[in-house]
Amino acid sequence: MPYLTIDNQRIEAKPGETILQAARAAGIEIPTLCYLEGFEAGASCMVCAVKLKHNGQFIPACGSRVVDGMEVEHDTPEVRDTRRMALELLFSDHLGDCLSPCQRICPAHLGIPAILKHMRGGDLGMAAAVARRDLALAGILCRICHRPCESGCRRGVHDESVAIAELVVHAIDTELAAGNPRPPLRSVDRLGQVAIIGSGFTGLSAAWFLAQQGYASTVIDQNPEPAATLRAAYPDLPPGLLAAELRLLDRSGVTFRNATRIADAAGLAELTGTFGAVLLATGPGSHAQAAALGLTCEGNKFAADKESMMTSQSGVFVAGRALRPGGHPVSSVADGKAAARCIEQYLTSQPVRRPAKPFSVFMGKLADPEMADFMQEASAAPRAGAKTMGIDIGRAIEESSRCVLCNCAKADVCKLRQLAIDYDVNLHRFTSGERMRYQRNVEHPLVRFEAGKCIRCGNCIKVAGDHKEALGLTFIGRGFDVHLGVPFHESMRDGLLEAARAAVAVCPTGALTLRE
Image (cartoon, rainbow, N blue to C red; front, side, top):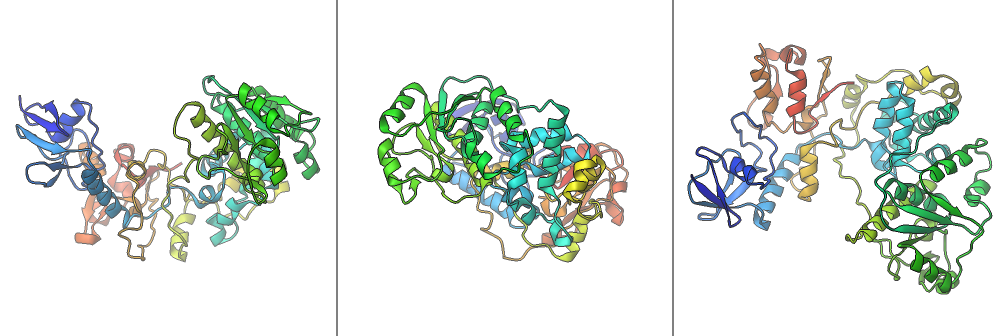
């Protein structure tokens, strides 16, 4: 049996096997993009590059057969740099947002595309569930938010932005009116309890997301009832809305301890001795307040590490306006969510680091012809008013159909995006400053094709041929102008009569996706 060594590990190989096949059989994962099991390797992307030790040459693992006794390097800084460069070259002409501008600009990164998709399907319960999964106090926050999501909405370039916040409010209100609001699924119960000082947006948000992660928390407030600051700041909220949100927190396992003031180091020490972690979510602090607690203050905010959100005292975290005075409520909620993640890391002995911004390619401003392509799948109706949606579910569904679908439908499963995260790519390393024109092909009733996201791997061409399509797909043009198309300039509908779903399934990016 032939053998090879990968990073000094001896691997047995079957006759005729490639380096990739032998490595996978041995449990060594070499990344791929253009490789498709069962078909001849195209070796076009070079993401699977490995280095031959005897001559320093880089070769594609997917298309290089094992030679007895060969030695290759796979997981070394030099090989990772080579793969990173291959990825950065792919991104040099990659066109299409991973996340929609509305989701990317929201401090809490609310899953707006998923919410609108459920709304279009008339499933307001699922729309509300997605909102609650991503956003604490969603029914309140979307009423009082300054709505950066709508400022970033691409539909606004054409006429008016989608009424995103009103749609979330509609879904939440409908769920509450039905009498069965559902908290998000809770993780398995974890060891360690958390004390949260303050029941404003930040504290309640942290409690909400800690509950999702399986941690019990106690929200401590000096006022006789929880969320007193919210009641005072927003007296015009619909009757019973805040109470309903607090009941959901209670159902999630959050305990409230009211009329309790933690004002000195002894009180804080008692909490740190009882709870696994403590979060300060009290609003802007002062030197006197910080000193009394045995902490330090910078200006009117508690001093804490920017990455871990932890104070100088181990296990004591700070978030929201106590860390960033003057922030918007949605920023406070986002901070509570980030603090919950940092506390989870601390309690599980991981490196403590607040979540990074989600990875996303961003196209920037659209030209008029590009906007026209986006409008192909959107309702032409004018924006609905809040009162109209409040009484008419049909109008709410129509409003959600005004979305131009500028997010990538495959963002969560895109192999190119995941590898970009894993290899920490520089999106702008090889860009020229100019970009191609965005195009969206919706000729096919099932499939959407976005040419700018195609990496020319050829996988869809292979499966179309395997399905014996009469026309199928092919590469058209030469050199830098090569692009995917249907032979004889026929439509995508004619090229994919039988293999549409299969072609979408093997596309490693969001170039081919299923239409709703």
